[in-house]
Length: 294
Image 1 (cartoon, rainbow, N blue to C red):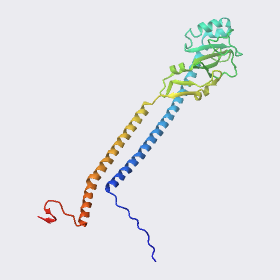
Image 2 (cartoon, rainbow, N blue to C red):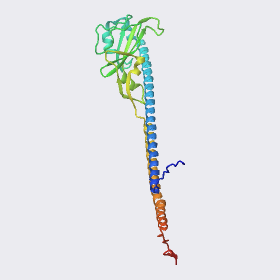
Image 3 (cartoon, helix red, strand yellow):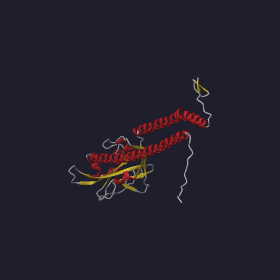
Image 4 (cartoon, helix red, strand yellow):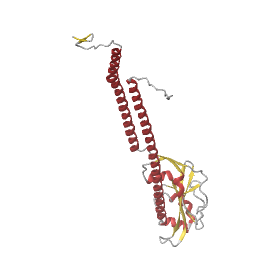
């Protein structure tokens, strides 16, 4: 007995349904395109943000180098100043000199927050500790590396240099220390293209100091909004929405064209053929009447 397999018959669908399916396919493809474009845009923004942050940290590194050079030039000016050298040789009037002459004589920058001199053992020449100046009472001559310390809402960078009698750096008289307001110095040293200087946050407790070479990694900040990136994002967004509008319009016009130009005539033709099969079909056009030529 031969095997018989069931025959599946699919009922015919109107062409309008196929047009609708085609439109849905186009819309689905459009949705995937939208997701892809949005994902690429977000990925581009993330890459730009990372690049801007890297460039901002590079600007900070360069600014710290400039600050160190500025401190070194200040040390050279101090060693060349007779009054400063006299204080190390005979500090009897050091208190007056420190508070009235050091920052007012115009030899060293008036942007310094404080200045101090130390003897060969690293002890300050001041007989009384000054809380206003807030310089260390003593330093370790064997370790005079610069550091940053937070005081209130500001961060201050401390530099210490050996003080020699002459430029040949043979006869050591003692040491000198400078205190800079970090934010103020950064603002004066250079202009920042990527770093938002007003957003710099000194993320350090007040009772701790940070070595200068670790400073950039410890600072929190925000980057300046890149106008070129914003312009690029606007262009991408505008182009995307224009493409979406064009595809939607084309899909709508294609659907209407299929329905009006193809579906309706075929529907009339199919109806006429069905009528003819049932013996009721007549040609309804000029020159024919009742199926006969007149």
